Image (cartoon, rainbow, N blue to C red):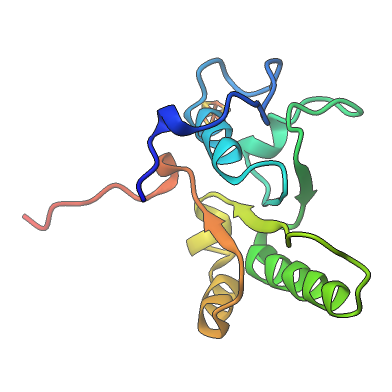
Length: 144
Ligand code: SF4
């Protein structure tokens, strides 16, 4: 079944007042990702504009749970969190639908300093989503 942007709910997980630049494509993308995943999600962020866009504490523009982690550990952090959740469900300490764990990382946290544990998580087929705002992909360079 295909889902279009019109099928997404009206509920907002990114509120106005984010500290990102006006019209920031990363924040707009995150708004859509939030609508697609729903409130039962845990977002892990490596250092990036997305972290700065949360705004000054104690306020936050995001209404889903957010973990700020160090640059090189997106894969290890997401893998560890999903394993902890699995253990808590196994022991009966958590009930209901398991939250979706997803990374919101940039180029550094993905294919530079973060590559080793993303690679290891892929090798283990760990249960999380790794998302990269489209603007962070390297430009295709023509060979000629
Ligand atoms: S990614 Fe950062 S610099 Fe680029 S528009 Fe968003 S907040 Fe501004």
